[in-house]
Image 1 (spheres, each protein chain N blue to C red):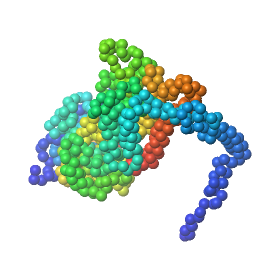
Image 2: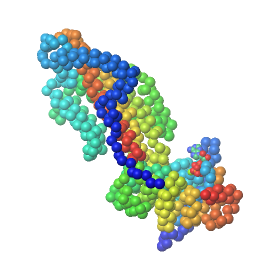
Image 3: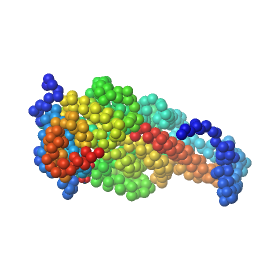
Image 4: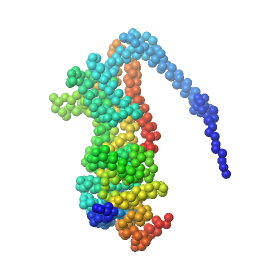
Length: 366
Length: 253
Ligand SMILES: Nc1ncnc2c1ncn2[C@@H]1O[C@H](COP(=O)(O)OP(=O)(O)OP(=O)(O)O)[C@@H](O)[C@H]1O
Ligand SMILES: [Mg+2]
């Protein structure tokens, strides 16, 4: 018996194209059609006024509230105070220092994120070790001929970024150490790590910040005054490292026992085994979880307003108090929310992208 | 050593009254075994008889609780220094290869020489390429383990161990996770290694391999060594009824 070769045919025309897609996904039977029409009606009737208010009827340019005549959003308010939203009370002639630090930060992140850029390892090292040092001298000054800028002048988006970046950069290694400690065979190390993690995970961040700002000074001699920002940073870092540790522990547990045994059998020491074999594999698995923690951390930084630091949200609230601009707090809250959203959404998209990439790339790498 | 195949009198591995427990469960019972330099030992026995546990004690992947294990004159104790020394001398090949999936074949091979032996990278790579040639896969050096067949992965694993220039090689069922057509390519490499004079302890049920290279075959059951003989005698004239039963079972197919 012999069969003829079958020809390759194009897909039937009623299964491809826009109309076919709409028929399949939007108007697939009476219930689906009604749902589509009703939801579509609500969506549109809700969107039109929003677009009208935020864009069509909005005013962007001007000097004072007198410029807001169109009846929509008064972005003039944000525009006039934009520098404060971005730089807080940082002296205007020193803005370039913040800008430079920001460009360095974003530049090296983009370098790392783009596929196929060379020297990724060195770049990561730069971002995690060298950049924080450069950023410190840039922002704080008081050396290399740079004017000192006290931390109580820091504020706005730049302060939010400082809190987030320091929190992220410091809590990751600390979290790794805690996770390793929690798995350790030495009972003392293990208990210390477990106690540390469980204490920090059981306390709300607000409490931590209050303790850092109010209680911590009580434990130190009076003449030793800790910078308020520094205290908040320590609080946030310790708090987040506990969460990070749990994410990392999950990743470590996903690595097969055979990997540890092969490393042991080759004679690698504990740290060599962890750094060269286990962590690189575990970190890949943990990226989505780590980025989630980063996003939570980023949003949590806004809590520092309760201890009197002027992060982005606090600057927005302060602006609302300005008698010249009473009544425009909606605009400032929307702007602040939008800024947070842009950063968090980018992180989330990147993590989804990575997840997808790791998922498909796994079969020929694992 | 003029003839590398010769067995010398130097004791490479010695187990004296070794006992091990997993909690309450007595896995190894009074194991006594002496392996001279250049000797090839094949270990067989039913599942759960303690074969893996025994050879994993030799490089301290498992800890024994009683008795002495001495490898190349170094006694295995709590002392981390000794464990380090022993692991440098002992290579191990696992049933599931356990290659490092995030590293290329070449990186898998040079990792330990560079970090444990502190060999310069150039030298380590040169040696790794020679060994990959010996296991007949130099052309795969830049691929990742996941891109290789099981047989190729196992040969990489052998090369990776050999890169540390071990004095003893332990094999724990190196071919039992492989498809039949790949078993031969791995066994060929192992036979060649045996002919070059390597001291080998090999857990396997490949009786053909045992007949070709083994100096002694050891049969384990219930956590102890039940019978030990040179291969011809072992297969033709098994003494213990449990050995007879086991052989009849595995030789059926
Ligand atoms: N980590 C462990 N904890 C508790 N019991 C274990 C552990 N590892 C192995 N055992 C038990 O010890 C016994 C011996 O195990 P071992 O792996 O040495 O057997 P084996 O002879 O290699 O068997 P197989 O042919 O299936 O590989 C088995 O009964 C097993 O269930
Ligand atoms: Mg076994």
